[in-house]
Structures are given as C-alpha cells and as structure tokens.
Image (cartoon, rainbow, N blue to C red; front, side):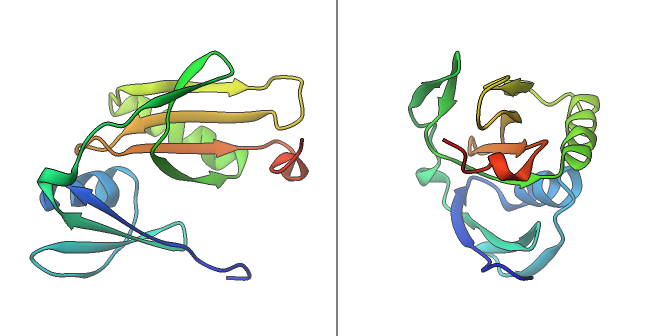
Length: 139
C-alpha cells in the first residue's frame, strides 16, 4: 500500500454481531482476535472491534447538504463502481440506511456519492466515492 494505513479501535456490544456485519456483510477479512476484540482488514486498514457494550452509544449529528450526518463515523472512499456494488449489496440485504445512497454537493466542488448506515452496535459508517479523485479535497 502506497499510503499510510490507519488503525481504528471502536466499541461493540457483541463480537458475533461484529463478525457477521464486518466480516460477512462488508466482506472484511478477519485478522487476529481474542475473547475481547477482533481485527478486521477494512480495505487495507486495520479496524478493531472491542467488546465494550457500555461504551456503545449514538452520537450527535450535524447538517450536511440537507441531511443529518452522524458526527461520530468512519468509512472509506471507494471507486464509484465499488461504491455502487456495495450500495446494491447493502440494499439487497435490507440495510436500514441513516442516509440512503445518494449524490451530495451535486454540481459543486466535492460532489460525491455517499451512504451512511449503522453497525449492530450503533457505530455509524460512511462509504463514499468521487467520479473525479481530484475532488476529494476540493474547496
């Protein structure tokens, strides 16, 4: 990988749920694990689901382009074809979206396809894609 990888640890209420969601639904290969945590390969980055049921909670939101975006969230920027395939897979699986797959900032710098959904523990995830990679940090 030619860019640094990030590492993110986050709380979950149940490791079996986390394995089903991140491993089975999102297709993230599992790495090391213990009775209290599980590593996942999240598109080349290391995320770690830690069993901490008392730490899971829904956070606040901020308005972004007409939607209430969860302040606490994480995700990745995919290619547009990969984003579209994931949106189809999640929709077919009956995912309850916080923000359904859509394009925001249409016709503006930073135009992006985006979707938000929660894992079983209430952690918010955003997956996005740009038709033009130069727009990722456009002002």
